[in-house]
Image 1 (tube, rainbow, N blue to C red):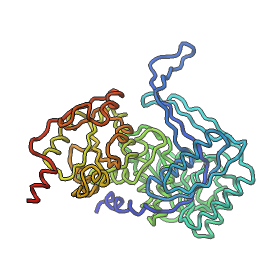
Image 2 (image 1 turned 30 degrees about the vertical axis):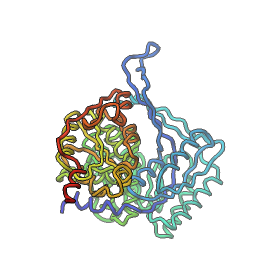
Image 3 (image 1 turned 120 degrees about the horizontal axis):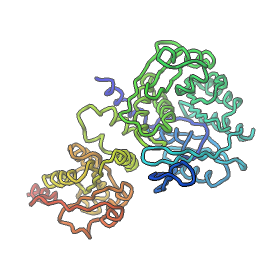
Image 4 (image 1 turned 90 degrees about the vertical axis):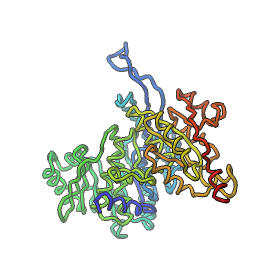
Length: 487
């Protein structure tokens, strides 16, 4: 079995892993547009804004990634009593598998990082934040909540962005309690003085942070090892995991041989939040019972996934499986994704300039008519997403005796077709919500429809797409096959 196959077999162990995460929570805003001219007022580009997105950043992005990998999180943080704080609370509340413990400090400004992006280029980042230490009562309450939560969690993840929540006294309290409870403590550190993290199990600095803390060069494997060994003595940790950008990742244990992993990204669009993904993957994997080497290898794969996406992105367990199976024979299962995962993937394809197609149906018993429809749909685009009615949806549309095959079986069969790039199962009777989320360039349906009867046709044409009616294969239908087999 290959290394990738062994890692793929471990991914299911991440599901249900329990982690307590504490750290600085912030709101990441992304403002997208085009820059086609220079301002007459100053030698700077003028960005014409086209859309905006907001998502959880900082420790919130660690939490998003843990949930994306299938883990469960007890999340402790602080926000201000302001609009951004309320928006952050709402975003946290939308995450499944998260038990939030968000403290509110009245006079504190919730941290907002706003990035202006034109094309693939980040033009400007504007921050609003309060970096001063939180009130003693807030710090004490946060440490108490973490200590209570770790009773049911295998790993404590500390995401320090130096915004004031994680003061040395409370870090010491958390680490002491974790050691007493025999819990793993992973710290994403900030600043030069790592003695504040003394007793933690694993630290995850990036290359620049390690160089600053150790006051040593980190230009190659050997120098990274020497700098990490210096920090290990100060912190009395078990290992340092160093993210090194294009040079990959290094795991330097206090005892044993260092491990240097190459960078795995096939393309890099945005490195925002990649460190959060590494922390989240390490924490989830270790909580799931994996070894440090196994966890680090998965974290390296996850980092390669998120840098190919724009924004503070998430590496889902399905993303890991696709990346690990990239060079294997394609299987239907790894193409079956959630709508959220499909939105991420479609966004990545668009940034490559690819045209996105969409078709949908029940596809109960795959027959030549289905294959012809999918082939014609793929001919209109560069990447094809197939929407599939769920079992409950098929029953409502076709009757109590349908579907013949389960949604999992149907999705696997459709996904095994070479023309299909992704399969998304939807529970509604129509794919309207899926269409609105993906905004395909081409919508394809069979010619037994007229354009005015195609669900989503008006919407697709409204955002500049087109509707294609595919030729039908005479005499082919699931209903006819079932009727014939019943004779």
